Image (tube, rainbow, N blue to C red; front, side, top):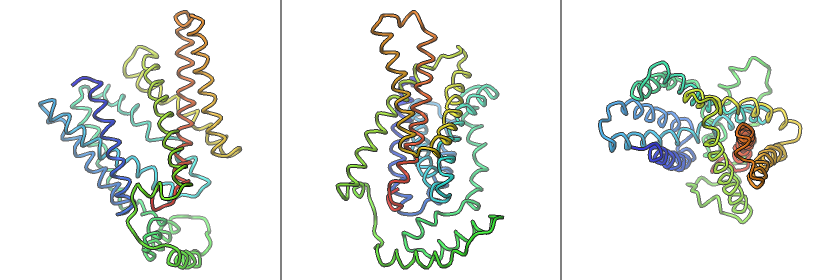
Length: 324
């Protein structure tokens, strides 16, 4: 199987898994679906070492991608529903999960061979399944599904781990219970609810368009900076490590000017860098400044990476819990 075909398989599987995992998490709960998907993804990752044919390998890779996509989308939503608004930007914009690729590169250097890498990465992830007993279910989701006792228990469990004094939440839970019971009715939500009203529909279309353009630009820029040093493993690590400081700056700037303007700032900066490349191309000087082109592409990638991180936060905060 060629590299391009393998990448196509895994990307399609990730999208399919995200679509399935999103609606299952909204229906059955965030925590159980997230950890089930994680366990199955690790299982297929480990089983992949037994593949002897391209068909078996592609099948196992696709299954691993499906459950990884399911896990990924829930692992972004669940923390945002547990932590407060002040820390959401810090949680999302750092994109700590992106360190997986640098860690995987270091791992492949140590163990060598794709079979050893697949086996090692799968085994290393298994102990994290034990966090099922530490990670609380989303109190927001429990409240929206009218499981008020479990929601109150989840909130009290988090409060018990907090060493700082907190106000009594019993009155807040009672007010929330009365509001939910008087204004909402339990029903199964689908992706059609994203277009339930004209306002929500316009916002959904705008978000989908922004995500499509941002991901298209990011992936293409990532391909342009795939040979920064000439070392395959180091070139896999550097592009993602470069994103961390710029995303950290996004956290700081976001607290000063807000989410939307901060995203706009980074997107415009990225677009300006790409426009500079276009000017050099029109002048016919593209081949004379290879290092400048690489630097501009890297800067553009960092800018659009920070914009996508903020877009993740904006998207999650803009939709209600039942369809988040």
